[in-house]
Amino acid sequence: MDFIANGFLHAFVLLFGGDPETYSAIFTTLAVSTVSISISLIIGAPLGFLLGYHNFRGKKFLRTFVDSMLSFPTVVIGLLVYAFLSRRGPLGEMGLLFTIPGIAIGQALLGLPIVIAMMATAVEALDQRLKNTLLTLGAAHSQILRTTLWEARYSLALAAAAAYGRIVSEIGISMMVGGNIKWHTRTITTAIALETGKGEFSMGIALGMVLMIIAFAVNFSMSGIKKRAGQ
Amino acid sequence: MKKINVLLSTLAILTLLVAPGLVKASDFLMMATTTSTANTGLLDDLAPKFQKETGIELRWTAVGTGKALKMGQNCDVDVLMVHAPAAEQKYVDMGALKDRREVMYNDFVIIGPASDPAGVKGLPVVDALKTIAAQKAAFVSRGDNSGTNKKEISLWKVAGMAVPDKDTWYIQTGQGMLKSITVAEERDGYIMTDRGTYIKYEANKNGSPELKVLVEGDKTLFNQYSVLAVNPEKCKSAKYELATKFSEWMASPKTQKEIANFKLLGKKLFIPNAK
Image 1 (cartoon, rainbow over the protein chains, first blue to last red):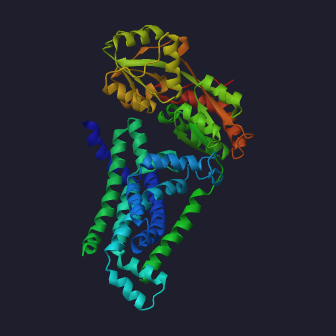
Image 2 (image 1 turned 180 degrees about the vertical axis):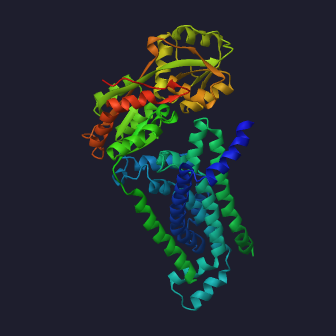
């Protein structure tokens, strides 16, 4: 039992004592998750819009496909991205293995289906009259895209929060693609795996608490938006 | 509506700004190594000294020796520090790696519960394994093709037995050394480990661990660690010069002394033996 209580105590020491290793892992986690959530949104939001907005042959199939990608296991993404980024792989020349952008690519793939699926659902739920009104007013395609995204902004924020929650807590991709390199690609989740592996449970619990604080903060800040999105 | 433009372009700019800044390559050396050198804290101790003396930053990823060798072959790292001489030689013969340099050693030991339910204490290692198998006492294996795992497999073969696999008493963790020791502790099992990691485990338990050393001192339990460079003829990206510098630095009298001075509970974890 001791080590659990010690863990909580240790967490405070690490956080308020400004332990450089802990803060390096926190910074890496924030840096990599910011890049990956940005990529997910930049690519995912327009794609989700297209999928929800247009009616075309095979749309149902495509939606089912995106939905099933929601359960893509992180270790499989990690494995695939590793294989592509390894020097022997097709993208090996870019030297992205064991780097933060490398992890971000994998995590963006993780977040992408979440953003696409949630955006598509939100756009479908929007009033069809909006599209007709915009067309009557002579809006260009890009204007329709932006107006619709703006109308669906709360849902977009929710999608971002859901994707971020998954990204910040995953370990398979960070471990395989990032390699858990001290001061560089060691994220909070890989650090926890390492510390428990080293038998340093209290350090693991401390880092776990930090991760929970980040996850809760994101969710908490979204609770207001959730209400508005529901309206 | 303009806000959405602002939001998306801000995100795009942010990504473009942050991403390249994070890949910027400086003078660093990428090493794949075994979990024992990393988990014990030896590299945490040596890396800053290496950087101070040579200006080269050492980055490492801790995986089993089997995977480390593969990473070298795939050109994903520049240098290796591993402990499976026979496997290392294969990769050198293949041309993937070169300049194998022995830098330090310790020995493997078999540890188990102090009560020693199978009664292996003091037995020669091969007899100990036979006894454990005959008694079906819980035995934890790394099961990850690491240096320790390769050694264990070779010992089952020396004992003239088929390597256990699906047997209920044979627990394959697929995890690093310290984590596997924790599994053995939870399951009251026996496990083979390098002595360095065992001392680290002892220190974690403040000197009174549940698992004790029961079998040791056999010549076959010798555990040699070596540094190998990735062959630049096979891997254009390999930083061969930096790898050579690291290898020489590891073998230098000063560093060898540092290795000998790396102690936990007053015990040496690794013994330097560079020629």
